[in-house]
Image (cartoon, rainbow, N blue to C red):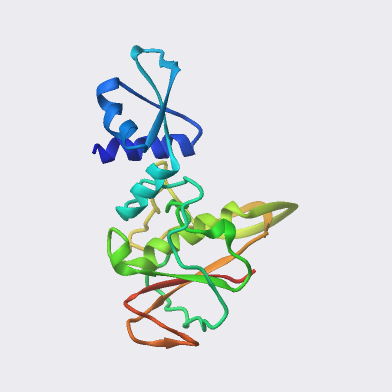
Length: 217
């Protein structure tokens, strides 16, 4: 099975675009029920290729590989969302600070009610640091559920270059800048905390090192 092709199709469909496949490329995933093809939607640059679309079976297959291929494909709820019982650990300043940049929405943010939460083990993410990975996912989710209020506010933030990387001063510290932007209101808000194997957090005992994500608003 060409997993990379299947991932490309899943991500393209989620972004409302398509991947075109030849009969040779698409035959195996098509026969497995992982994709459908539209013979009327041909590649404008290669008429031998047609548009491919991921199926629910294909999404589930990718999720079973614990990859990031199902990014932005809904619904893919592979985490056990629970309500109540969790006591969030204290924030560890300077550790695993998450950005807002881009973890996949295979996580069930859209379906979570206030106080609902789920656990992600370090072993489930590619770099073995669920806190850092979920920091990015939570940052993206919070921004996704933010709406403009029409009011302006002045904030201080890290200055970034054209490559979106933080600009450093001569001492290696982040350069800050003050900007005026529209104030936002969060219609949903999530937080992430690192947890350690065997420790008790309310009624939850962490089965391994990882992170918990909870909706707080």
